[in-house]
Image 1: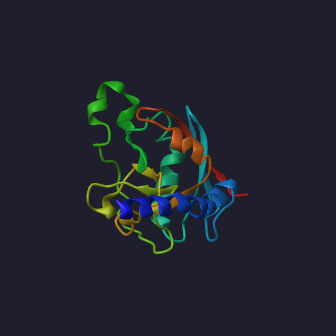
Image 2: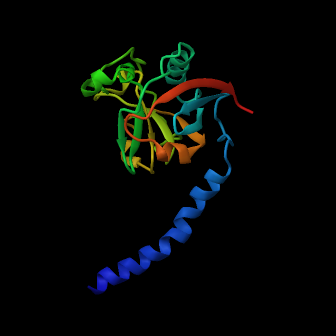
Length: 189
């Protein structure tokens, strides 16, 4: 019992220090990280809009692949097909436009990137944008996810190619079957 009480006392003190860096980064809405690329992806959803920076220096083929899909309007009208509270929000399956195919959402593979561009610099922090896959990172295709918390166990298993720079509160509100209105690309300011 004593150990439990001490642990609770310690945990009660942690948020004051642990949340300060997160608040600072979320308070700097739209500010790019050092080394981020010139392209920012704007994601309009039925719950609001968020933006993420891209990392073409660390993941050039992945970023080019995703930007090409956005240019073809691949993601427009899709739905969130996976949402695990405190973990990830995922989209990118073209079948999600059809509610009659709901049982198959997340299972269809698209054109693969063909390479796993892992980075020691770009890791699975809260707001990281990465490509999902079924066991082989080189076969990651169109499905991307956003981490809702720091998730270091995913590092070097999934390619991080971006990070949310504004609208993380919108990402936090997204639920299963919410609609992605459209993705567009703008140049960084």
